[in-house]
Image 1 (spheres, one colour):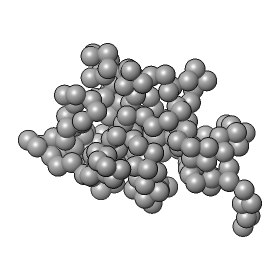
Image 2: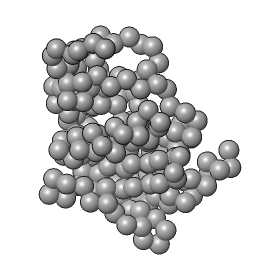
Image 3: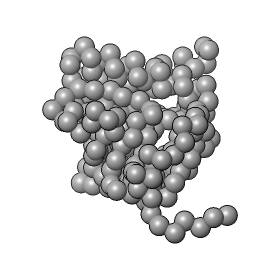
Image 4: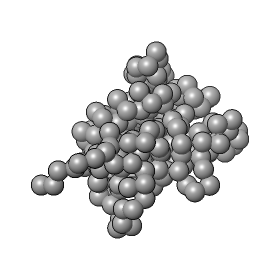
Length: 186
């Protein structure tokens, strides 16, 4: 086992190989994940369509998906599965392909390799970095959680009429039962 002697930064991340792995840095530590499984990809596709259709129809901003580097600090560079940036904040998405600062919405879809990081370290990182809304989706357990940042801490939203309402994308409602039912049909 090698001992990391210094905190890694975005420059270090840029030197990682293009080998199909997902490289992130949290607290200066390198996190490596393999490509996601089929259920993960299916959920990502459905959520990208759901969010993207709403955002595009109303010209609300930009939806992006992994791989995309989100630089939250010099030693915290993550690649969320999906993210949304409001139109008036699109300047944080640079032409070189990275996002400098917190997106308005981050979606993480839990895979076997991220079942501790997404609801743990990333949850805390996104809250401390000021990401207004965080969705945590677990295809294996069919669990969908929508968290809203209030006074620096995430509070979990509750479903109303079978759906969870986004606060950062006006009018967007997610029906978790419908989202996961589509997985069972594949």
